[in-house]
Amino acid sequence: MKKYFIANWKLYLTIAKSELLATRLLATEKTNARRDVEFIVAPSMLALSSVVTLLKRAKSKIKIAAQDCGFADEGAFTGAVSPNELKKMGASYVIIGHSERRQYFAEDAALISKKITAARAAGLKIIYCVGETKDERNVGRAQAVVKEQLRGFAKDVDVIAYEPRWAIGTGIAIEPAEAEQMHEYISREVGGALPICYGGSVSDKNIAAFTRLQHSSGVLVGFASTTLQAIVAMLQKI
Ligand code: PGA
Image 1 (cartoon, rainbow, N blue to C red):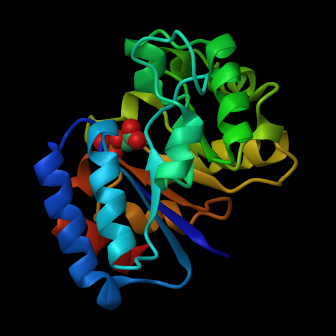
Image 2: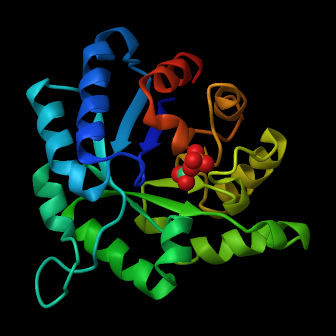
């Protein structure tokens, strides 16, 4: 089955650095491309247009995801980003419900639902993120939290990214066996129908342990996806 390698560049790279990394990726694409891997890059919103242009010019197979989108395509929504324009610009996917959006931008289920509806209408595929906090895991509520986050959304999304919140950006990934337990749970919850990726401190050291899990369709990588060397090393082990 096809594996996903989703590189979430967050706000780590300037426009210039995003273009440089995209150019380097393209230069090595022939050597590193894997037919069994869907390689998706999510540049910052401001870098998205120029990265798309570079990929198109090179006829690259690398797909583009937006890191977020608005819930409307036009109107009085200051600062918002139209899902339809993202699609027209060349994005194939959009990440919705990332824990950083939930935490720093106060995104709740009602807003996420509107975004999912708008993104689907625009024809974007949706990478939907779920995951519990450390406290929630410690008190045995991890599955209940994820179940609640999936409620009503699973039928409308294309990829689930399970990202325990305490493992994101900390260098401390969850134990692969614990990830497998949650992936299996999610798989049961969604009727086995969706690819499930793991995210949270994935690196070239641990990627194989997560992609080898029975219920794993790949990884969503943040910090480690911002250098060429690390990407190449991870693609070799996926
Ligand atoms: P990280 O981020 O790999 O830097 O932990 C993962 C994510 O938030 O998608």
